[in-house]
Length: 515
View 1 (cartoon, rainbow, N blue to C red):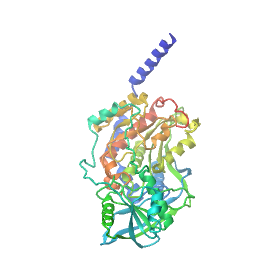
View 2: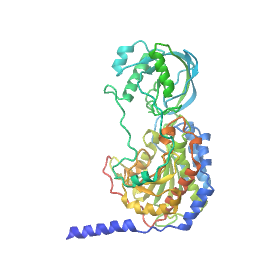
View 3: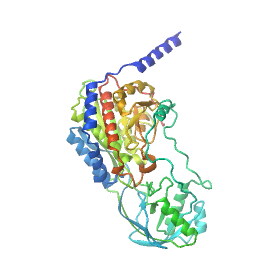
View 4: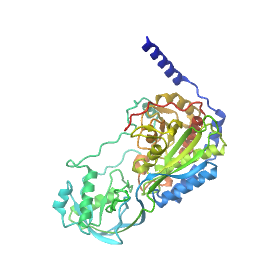
C-alpha cells in the first residue's frame, strides 16, 4: 500500500511539473524583442572582440585586450562587480609575432601555413631541404633517419585522397532533424565523433609526437603537418604541445593546407628535391601564468531571492589561426548583448543575473571548471559549497554563429515544460525544439557535473564544422548578424524568466563523486 501511495504521489508531481503554467511577463517579452531585434549592438560587440582584439589564445595580448574591454563595457552599462577574476594556474601564454613560409625549389610559390600554438620559432630566416619521413613509430624513425634530420624540414608520408565536397558548407537544421532531436534518449550523443584511425597500432597523434621528439633531438628545423578536415585553403590549426609553465618549448610545427602538403609529398616521392624558406617568430608569455574569467552582475532585488544567481556565459578565448569569430566571439558577443538588452530596459530581476566569459575553454574548460570548483562544488569529491544551492541555472552559447533552434535539456526532463513555454513568444523566430539529449564539449558541462542545471542551446550549424571551427577562416565576416540578434534576444528572455521565477529551476539528482 505504501508503494502504491508513493507511486501515486510521484506521478502527481510529474504531471504537475509537466503541465504547470509559467508566469511570463508578455509585456517584457515584447520589450526584449524590440530592443534585441531592432536596436542590437551585437555586431559592434563582435567587432571589438575580433578585429580590434585579434586572436584570443588564453594568456595572450589579444585575450587581455578583449577581457579588459568586456569588463569596462559591462561596468559602463551599469553592471556591478565587473572584474577579471583569477581562477588558478594555467601556464605559459604564447603569441605569434611573424610568419613567412614559401617553397623556393623546384620553383618559388608561397605556402598557406600557420604555426601551432606554443611552438617555437625558427630563430630567423632559414632555408632548408625537406625530407620525407615514412615510419611506424619513434624506433622506426631512429632506425631509418638517424643522422639525416639536422637542419631539415620534415614532412611525413601520407596516403589520404582529397575528394570533392558534395555537401554545402553552410546549412540550417530541417524541421525533420529538429523533430528527431526531440525524440532522442538522454544517452544519445548530440554530436558523435568518430574514433581516430590508427597506423600499425600507433595513433596518428602519438606517431606525430614520436617523430617530433626524434626530430628535436636530431636538430631538425621544423615539421609540416596537415588536416584532412581542411580543404580549399582552410587550415584547422590548434595547439602544438604543452603550455605548462615548466615544460620545455615545443618543436616548431607548421600546419599547411592539405593541397600544399600533398604537392610537396608527391615531389619528394618522385625524387625531386624541395626547398622551403621560412621565418617564424613566436613569443612565450610567463610573467603572469594565471587564468582569468570576466564576471559581472545585474544585482537581484528580491530580499528573499536576491542572493540566488542565474548565470549566462560563453568562452572568450580562441585559437590563433584567425580572430575566433564563430568560436567563440559569437557566444561572448551574444551574452554581452543579452545583458545589455536587460540593462537598457532597466529590469529589476528578483535573482542576481551573472555573466561569465571564460578563459582556457579550448584547453579543457579550465575557466568554467575552476570557477565551479572555487565557488560551488568539487566534482571529484562532490563537496558542496554554500554557493551551490544558490545557482538556479547556467545558460551557455558556443556552437558558432547559427541562430537558436531549441535547447538541450541535458537529461533534465523536469525543465521541458518550462522551456517550451519560454520559447512560445519566439516560435516565429524558428526556436522551439526541446530535446532531452546531452551535448558536450563546452562550458555548461562544468555546472552539470556538480548537479547545477547547465544548458547549451541548439544552433543551426551553418559553416561551423566545415569551415570556421578552429580555422584560419574564423573571422568576423563569417558571422550572421540576424542569427546573433535572434540568439541574444531569446537568451535575454530566458535569463529574465529564470531570474523572476518563484522557484529555482528543477535539478537532477546529484551526480556521484569523481564523474
